[in-house]
Structure formats: C-alpha cells, structure tokens
Image (cartoon, rainbow, N blue to C red; front, side, top):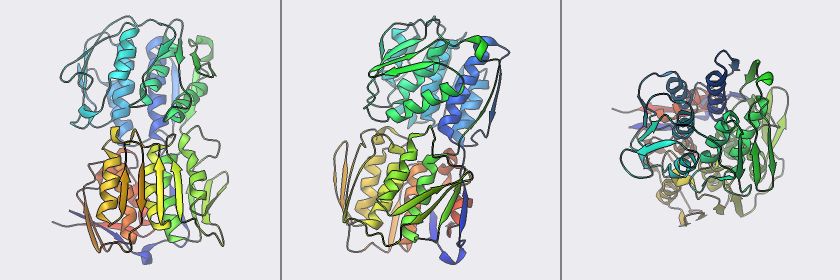
Length: 420
C-alpha cells in the first residue's frame, strides 16, 4: 500500500517544473517516421525531444519488432495507430494484443473503416475488441470515408496518419464539433510539420498523398506535454504559491489541452508566457464563483485533475463532455464519481456529465484504487492537501505519460511512502 504525503516544508518557494514531452505528438510522429521509411526506404527523419513515457517506448518497440505477435500492454493509442499502420504495411500476419483492460476498449469503429478500404483484419476473441489478427492486404482509397468516433477520436487520427501514403490520399466525412476533435487537429498539426498537405472545409477533410520532393530530410522537435501541466495548475489553485514556472509549454501549441489556460482562469489563475515556458500565479483579489461549469469535450484528459481541483475551489460543479472517459485506461468517469463519494461529496452522474455538491468536511482517511491509470494517480495526489491519510494501491502507472512525475511533484512538497 502506498501512502501519499504533503509536507509544505519541503516545497520550493518558487518551483520550476520540467514537463515530459508530449507522448501524443511523439506517437504520431513515430508513425509518420515509420511510414516514410516504409514508402521511401532511406528517408532521413530526426525526432528531437521524443517522449520517454511508457506509451512511447511501447510504440518504438512495436515498430521495431519482427515478431508476429505484439503485446501493447495498456497502450490504447499504440493499439489504434498500429492497427492502421500494420493494415497498410505488413507483409506477414500480425497479432496485436494487450492487457485485459486494453481488451475491454472498443476498436470496431477503426476496423470497420479499414475493412472498407480493403484491409484484412479478424477478431481473435470478442467481436469488436483486441486481440486482432492483421493480414497483408492492398489498401485503397474509398471516398468519401466516414470513421465512427463515438468511442475515440483516435480512430479518425489513425486513418489520417496513413492517408498520405495511399495513392490518392483520403477524403473524410468529419464532424468538427464532435467530442475530442481537437486531438484530430493535433494529428493534422503533426502532418503539417512533415509538409503533408490537407484541407479542412466544414465537414470535408481531404488528406493529400505525400510528395517525395518535400520529404528528403526532416527534423521535428516534440513539444512539452500540456496534459501533464494540469496537475500543477490544480496545485496552484489550492496552494496559491507566489508562482509556479512550467518549462517548455507553448501558447501556440497544436495540443488541444492548451485550453487548460482558459479553464484555469475560472480558478483565478493567470498564465504568463515567455520563451522558457509559462509561469502561473493567482489573480490578486480574485473571488471564485460558487458554481463552475466546464465542458471537457475537447480536452477530456484534463478532466480528472481539474474536477478534483474544483472540489477545493467551488461549492458546486457541473461538468459535461465526459462521454469518452470510460473508454480510457480505466473507467475514469465511474472512478471519479467513486472518489468524490468517498470524500462525502454528493454527486449526480450520467453517461456524459458529472455534478457535485461539496461536502462540509473531508474524511481523515481515504483508500482508493487507481485502476493502474496514470491520470487517476495525479488526480488523487491532490487529495493529500486535505485528507490526512491517502492510501493508493499503486503509483507506478504515472510512468505511462510522466516518468519523472514524483521528482517534479516533490518540488511542491508531495512525496509518498510504501508500507509493507
């Protein structure tokens, strides 16, 4: 059992936080790099500041593997992107499998789109879920193509990544107002960095075939991860330190989770950008509203930490755009509801929303199951401000996206102990 601790004596007066590079951008860039090498063989692509997170390591190992079966652990992004990648490129049968949780996350929306283009994919266990058997096949454009994104925007991102490597590209039917479309825009942003052309006009997205002359040598530097910054914004809203400086973040990022700046304004946090990154501080004289309303439809990865931060800052909260949270590394929406109830907080839960009314006082002790979900560990770490004893079953899952999380959190006074 892991005990979370907060000791303000150990906190730096003015903390300088180093974030990991974005695993979301890293994994997209790795797929493009691999596809360029597949199409042109001797393509030179240099990726700088590549993420060291577990998800990115899983992606790298899978792309380098010569085995017929590849275990992707709990890496949902890798599973989706590699399904399309191998459907296009494999010359021998490939089996993609993973953890029990990965096998519970639907994949049919992506598989159906690939089958429409001529892919050969079979479900080896439960229909619509991993593991998959992918056989060599000729993938051809079938236009316009609709990709179901109800369960994940990554189904569309996965298809967008392979589209430039088809003879005629792909024309997609899309809904720019759909949940998590900001992550599709991130994918398009990565394509742009590789000089791959596309056009988005209303509900029509055209990804054009890649031009050889524009891809002779590329050097792409990965941005710092906006999703990981949510924890430190949450800390600032509660601690109200002089300021916290977060290195490497860009205001003009291709990451949709930069919307964190807007949401944090409701917490009374100002963000001041420089070449080094962003420094955040509380707005003098700010008085928070009694109720906060946030829509996370374009930034669901921010929801766990910011909802927990809201519990400290508002009497009531109403959060929407949560429909895809239960398809993540854990059933995040259900877990969040359980955590709040354990704190004595009254909630109302639907498939898309969560509402809370703050409790008069928090309990002295809470024991929680993280479901081995990195976002939930960060979310629960905030509780050590208000709950004397926070016990978790594990904390190592932060390695999935933020390997140095505890080193950085310790700068703000957070630590942990392991009880036998």
